[in-house]
Image (tube, rainbow, N blue to C red; front, side, top):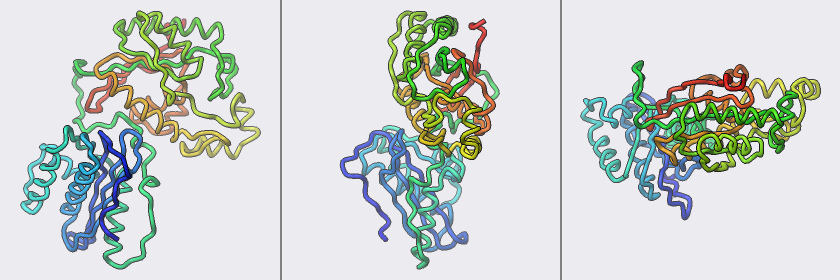
Length: 388
């Protein structure tokens, strides 16, 4: 098997992600590398590269994976690259924070640096090994093939961690207790839509286009007042396409000077499938097994519906686009329970249990500050004082 798998025909991405890894069985020992180039922000696999390296060290294999991934990105015509590796050594050395003391790694580091210089922008991010399974699998495949072992075909898209590339809030910047400067932060104000009749009755309300109730209209106006209290210099308002959100967004807009509302389709609520319009008790009575599975895993979808993992992926991609479109601005995002909970889960680096423990009121307001390096400050969650 040749070590290079070519790009999709006609694809010319501007920004891509490179996941790279390498390993050796023994240090030194038989070694191999693997690299995956993905589109940004969707995460589609564009190129895979892997190859055996004979007998060498683990660090040499990791650097080789980086070099081959950068070469593949360059061949695709990318101008910006987000490099993700589980090698702290390579990430810190390529970021200039650690010295390269091993003379055997310097030629590879120099090759990587020469490639980096050919892009407009390259960032390096350390990720846990669980997030780098696709590149790791390719490196192991290279070593297995070189050893004559049987190899099972594994698709890189099947090895994407649910949290990647969905989360916008993973940062390579050092942690700090000091109050952050707001000079280049983007303020994100999350607002759940006002009440509908289904909200009041405690029924699953996913893709059904249910309008605001009279109480919901009043709540949305009050939320607009709270948003104006946070900032009167709103840059943009983005909204789910469903009427209960666009109407909430319009009423907020009226309170902050008529900022136009932009509909973002991927901010729509989770599709609850057969559970739409039913209460929790009704669903649990009719689908007890399915309900238990759904509560136990974000990978499980309601019958005929959508999993939280699927929602997280599309919402994460939408949020990246929003943040890229309004850097340093104040953005109001009007959506539903599930998208807002998923954004807050990732912002707080919480587990999936958070999704079932957080309650979001209709027209509740949450505020985050997000920096270009991925750092984040959560200012408030589910403010409701404006509703009393």
